[in-house]
Length: 347
Ligand SMILES: NC(=O)c1ccc[n+]([C@@H]2O[C@H](COP(=O)([O-])OP(=O)(O)OC[C@H]3O[C@@H](n4cnc5c(N)ncnc54)[C@H](OP(=O)(O)O)[C@@H]3O)[C@@H](O)[C@H]2O)c1
Image 1 (tube, protein in one colour):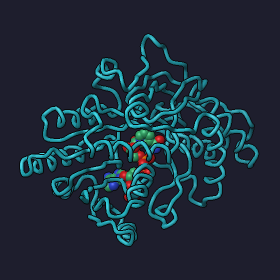
Image 2 (spheres, helix red, strand yellow; image 1 turned 120 degrees about the horizontal axis):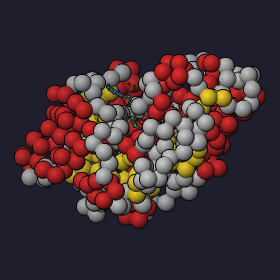
Image 3 (tube, protein in one colour; image 1 turned 45 degrees about the horizontal axis):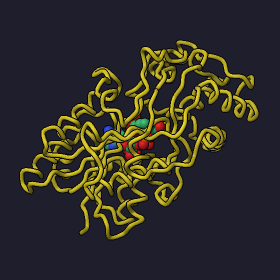
Image 4 (cartoon, protein in one colour; image 1 turned 180 degrees about the vertical axis):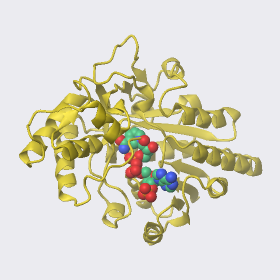
């Protein structure tokens, strides 16, 4: 039977990637997307996606659309409390009407597993390795962690039993998104974390990193991440995926040091005449406040993807070498784009 899907974040990097997959299996899903840009909404309709014009503060629209759907996939914003609450309110209405708990796939991030290291390497006594198959370590995440307030709201809905929640936690996502929604000018092909460091480096005329850049993050390639979402969706529909507090799925397939990423983009920027030297220096405190709104890029994130690989058959093949190669491609793409250095909020 055709499943009804309410989709948030359709025009984004993660969302565009996931939506392209869904559109690849016509007849399986009837999709309605919340879109705030009228031109993009019109274009999306030509792909057979119904649209609701609105933004994440339109709680009534979100609640109604979630109440109308078997499945809600939210890839728009890991920190938007109102949107998560409205989705849950809609799910509750649906449960009370049908007696069946709808599926809610939420997007968080491995920012939830971070410290405040200012570019130094993590202290294992203070920052554990968060393995997503280890319930005890996941339950120890501080309530004050990044994204955690929204994750706890989502988990609360699952605990009450009226919704089945699945939370995907991508790490640093890399790679230029390709596909028909990008070609049509609908989906954003760029990630956030490494591109913003590249853009800040271009704007200051010198490649840089937070502190010494000894901090470490996991990474995952965008197309492989969307495969995780699709596998999770199918397993959630089949009833084989674990949910709630046992339904956190990390997207990760390798790690990198920020200084090595910075060396790669600084070399590439220098070769293009956009960095005074080929070796990165440290961002100043003023740079960090101006470009990033805080030293988030100096944190460590320690996360291990076990659950999706073990339970969903997710088998990413892209690793560290692909990550570093993608940085060179990202530099070339940003430099080729006349609007390439426009800054977006770091989330
Ligand atoms: N990229 C990563 O490496 C990464 C890793 C982990 C977690 N995450 C989290 O995943 C989420 C999505 O990331 P992304 O890289 O896909 O970002 P993105 O490319 O900027 O996509 C965000 C999507 O959400 C929509 N959106 C955002 N705020 C909205 C609002 N107020 N009203 C309506 N629509 C809104 C955007 O619409 P418009 O097209 O109209 O802007 C776009 O469709 C973020 O919360 C991010 O923190 C990202």
